[in-house]
Amino acid sequence: MSTVVAHGPLISFVPMKSSKGLRQEFSNSKFSLSKSNPLIFRCCSNKDEKSQESQMGFSVLKKDVECDRGIIYSTMAFYVFSLHIPLSFGGLAIGATILHQQVIEPQTEALALLGLEILEFIGFVLLLKRPGEPQYKLLDLFQVDELAGERSWLLASLIGFLFLLFLVLVTSLIADQFLETKEVNNPTLQALLSSGSISVTACILVYCIVTPFLEEIVYRGYLLTSLSCTMKWQQAVLLSSLLFSASHFSVENFLQLFVIGCVLGCSYCWSGNLSSSILIHSLYNAFILYITFIS
Image 1 (tube, rainbow, N blue to C red):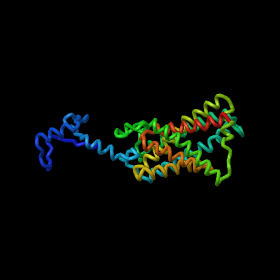
Image 2: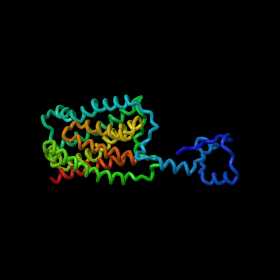
Image 3: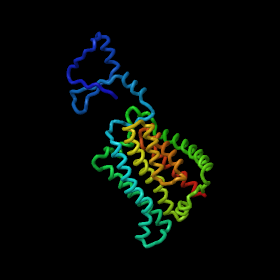
Image 4: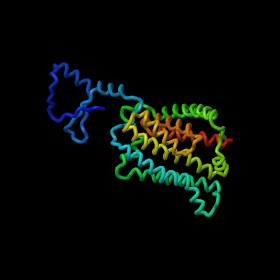
């Protein structure tokens, strides 16, 4: 909201209005004392509020954070090659070596996955604390702008989740036309879910809680928010979704992951609240776990 801060008498070259006009102008304005200095007051016109609300577009992400693309890309490269790949793709192998086992049993594997995801999350949070990074507070990612306060992140989550299921179904049909038809269920995930209650609980924690929080904070909370300060929000959504899909290193699922990233990014841009994309991500993963479990 634009404000006019007056320090004592205001000298203006605007033609003076009559006293009646001044009374009318003051009646259409809001006044509030500044917290930093009680002698400073703010005059906010209702017309200005309405004009700003009408000018607010699809995305409500803030653009007042200074971001450098070089720092953004270097941070993501460091995260992917120093945290994501070693922990996600080499963590279980290291665990098997430590346990002196060629193959880790499913229950131990599920618990190891949970520990590795938590370790990766902590590592990225610490990475954001280094000097030169855009200074984001995690709690700020779950707060909306005042002008976007009427936008319900729960409604955005519901619409986004239903739309995501539809798009994934369509992209699956398209992919089957050009690629080999693959099994719907993941054999490794099936083995984990059929190994007892401890494995099932660990899988729920990994895929429905820890992973959505980690990936949404990385690719939407940090990457998308930072990119939107340097380019149009549509370009930021596409680029962040591209990197999100590529980081999974899955050729056969690349298209679907890209679509998922776009839906999650649009939901976050519209609501301004990371809770929206986290909930969609969690619901989608829970849906996949349920389908795998009952099969």
